[in-house]
Amino acid sequence: MMAADDHGTGSGTASSFARLQAGDPSGCDVDAWECARATSWLYPESGLSREDSIELRDAGFDLGAHVTTHCQNWSEGSLRLAFPRSLRSFRLAYPDLPPQAGSRLHCIAWSQMTSQPAIERDWGVRLDMNYYYWPGAWVSARPGFMTGSGLPLRFSDLAGGLVDVY
Image (tube, rainbow, N blue to C red; front, top):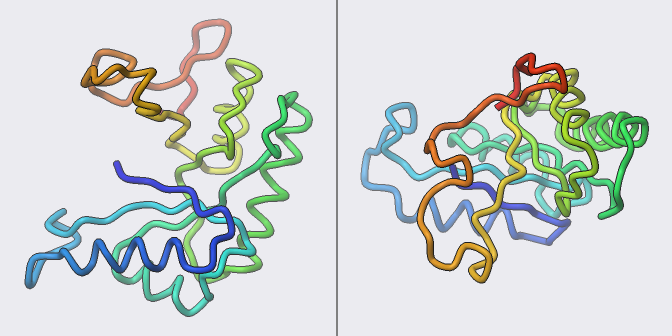
């Protein structure tokens, strides 16, 4: 899955997605996964216009709020405030986009093991993308996933029950 964070750039999302579209094979079918598509996590003050967001959505791209804790460690309570603040601001800026089903926190501060997936699920998020195969010094050119399975795995709570977020 390709995803990028647009931290309020003037044209980062639009130009990145335009490059992907320029590489589309002639007549490719988005629904058959023949065209390269990606997700962009945006701040509401991004340079992307409402009209451009509609065009990109219609072309098969995914856009969603880049929830932020301003790179601070968070508590369950503060994260429960951050999600509605970011998601509602995003919805005001881009009301024509569907509710997002994925999410990635800005800075990926991971303060607790179980709160974030539970809060994401409360907001309809089913895919947590707080995973980076980066920086190169950390992965040391080793291919693969941290889980070793190559498959998205569901989170669990402290009692071992499954949370319906991957």
